[in-house]
Length: 166
Length: 149
Image (cartoon, rainbow over all chains, first blue to last red; front, side, top):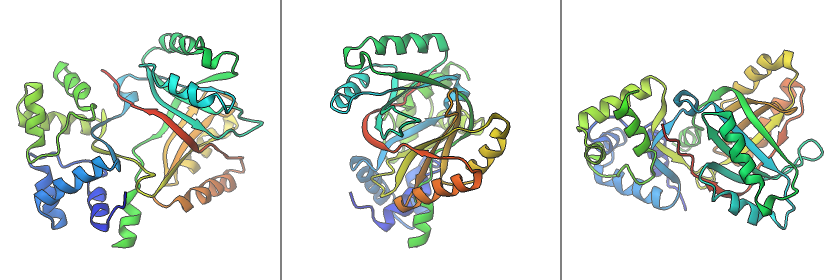
């Protein structure tokens, strides 16, 4: 969907968070020179158009106790990877699932999923459960637990561009 | 975190739980059996304490015209800190994790301008003298990161 300059100003104004005041959309309107009704209508349009995927709480998972986080990867033949990805996405403990480009020879894997857990043993059991699926049978795989987070913040997409067009 | 904080975190990760209406906190609070002022105060405290990175939107970078990729490097252990600082110094790097694998540093590069992603990866390769392996997303099967506490 096309994102107008006004929409971008609005996205920039909320990318670090919605004002934590009783009438946050009226507050944003005051900052941007828009009416509360216009702010609400524009945000609803951005949500309906999928530009805003989700509105609400963005947690720092490690600070909430999710320290056993694994990236599990498989090398699935290209003609089977779609079916395998859709099957993986059905597991309730899979939090993200993507097909990505391989980087042979160092990285032969093309199917990636994340499992966020509080206990490594549980996460390993969950990955074993995935591995018993016929779509993934005999596919080489690896599990990469994260050791440390050096940087963890939401990506900022709109700020620079909005400034450039302002 | 007390039980009420936990209920708030569990409820408000739901994509449909927070309305875009004139008094959204009042509506969300009512559904949780709380007062508006109490919900706002608790969200402020959890943001200040770093449990929440923010209370607001999660964007779709591609629909905004931007681009995101996942990249990985093999970093010698004795250079890990120095290389992490070089990588993190780029504002386009949104996340950076150490992982157990010969490719031991994994980071996400996100840019409003898709043309910016490649130069950032090239700059990191040049600054560190290490190969940067780019693994862009080809297809998305699921994104539903939602964690119960």
